Image (cartoon, rainbow, N blue to C red; front, side, top):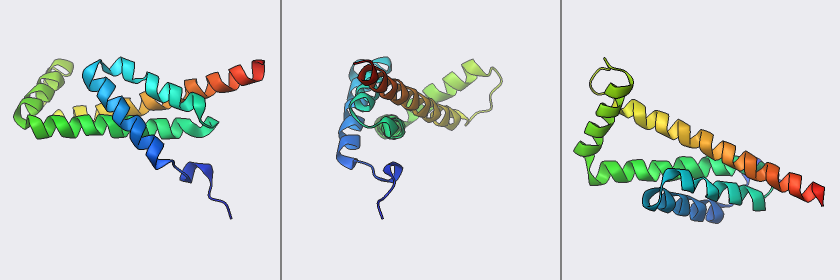
Length: 128
């Protein structure tokens, strides 16, 4: 019995893409990191958008852990400030909510980038 595609993940490709996403995010900007899952999904099967979602969550998770490891107090203060800006009367200690929202945002970006890459592949291969 063959394992379904969504259970068969290519770990090496996912890890390489995750590291590239985190690097581009840290060095250039988050918006440029979206190119990696888009290209990844273009060259892999049409269900690669699930892998792209995982890549973005892992990459942003690496960046969150790195921020908290290198500068925990500063990261917590920055997150508190962002929460206070968004919700003027936010309770103290709610900075972790921003991390959860950030990871959900990363998942959405990865999913959408993967869908666009997969769709572009299907569209361009059918038009030839």
